[in-house]
Image (cartoon, rainbow, N blue to C red):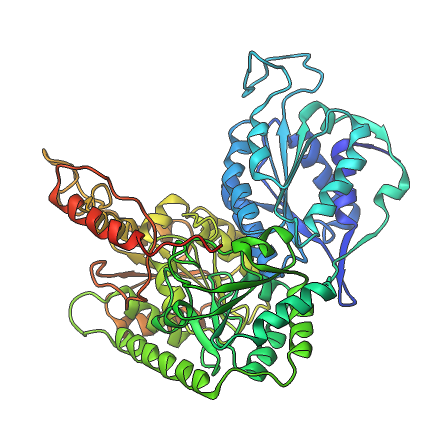
Length: 620
């Protein structure tokens, strides 16, 4: 079949499928793209032609407004589909390509599949230097797309059409492997995209990629079971792998049979319903007092599908003298903290553990302790949700009202600032897919774009509540326009606190006095004048969204009810008091403080830091 390279790419992608547990589905749900001279005549033309051949539903094109944002949307979609479906994203060479680098890093950090097809400079070099070409005196083979190398799980540049088949197959291998997945980048020189070649028909046949559920190696299972059976105070740390492998029912059965309490990472939150007897809630630097107290005294920690970020371990200060059993599909994560490695799919591994531990349970007193600690935390949360009834509402009050408005299968989406921490501690999920917070890369600007991808992946009846602060909103609100264009309804709760609330609090904790974190006019002494007259509600309306402003919790309840009843994307704008904190989960996060300073606040913070750092361990 004689096609251009761009046409061959499109036809190949349209015929890739995944299968797990006997269920087949088309892998690529479509292509997000912004066109420029580097891809308009190649991939752009190919998408147009393929769609006109009545194939539009096989690989539909979606127009984005920002290249970074379209990768975030693709990540939100793939995560909501448990990594069994994905999007591809195409850009031109130059700023279009480099805009996607942040999105690529986010995808790879979070182990989420996305295929990136940035245009590239001419492979033939006939017109070098072309527009937007980065000239490197050391080599003519370098372009800005080399910036994707460290943030991609697979990277290749297609300098000849003959190189395409092997690159496409390698890309699919990585994208569909739960242990290897992340961003995959295929740089496509613009002249090669438009070059014709005779391709074998087999390249475009339906190809099914089987996503396996590897089982534990028997000797490794035996070692893990021996360690768990000897424990008196074991604790499970449930990560994103539990949800991606759809192991939540198996986790529930394991927890109920053994009585082992479950703490949840950001990616693993929702692995158990919040009111399950073994659910200890969020764990780590943004965790609950219940989960963190259990973690400090745990003698065995069973990590399931977690990569043990510094927030999960409270910068390695949370777990005391403990041993680790790590069940993970990736050997890299299973070996962390000198743990007993159990390399397997989360669902298959949990089933094997439950069978091998048949008849074993934690002491009854430990079950009761879990219930008492969780009840104490829940009382604190109830109080935070009620608030004081005075002044501007706190962020905790806002989350409480949104939680009341959300139905059991609705989804909350967030990414950066202080809200992810508060959501981790306070949100009460009832569905494994009801909590979607991107905290591996904690990328400001993910919220609206990621929420769009989540909504595109779900049943239309499930509402998506996007929680976004004014700082993140100002970074990237552009995909409101895409949501409006595509008729994809979001409920965006835009929290206005006139600055960077999270970093403001962090700045204060290290003695830096909230320097550079407030949105204020400049005066002679710095940015400490009056509040800027920024009208984010008017901005959202100008982008095509319906906007409702709420000033009190009562008005917020009414606004959310109207937003749910609406058929269009609705932004609910609410101002909060950033100085009223949420309940403290009693954990630490390692952020170094200046060792010497003329400021009293910094010296005091350094003294606290030195004291806290003494609790940091090696986990060896």
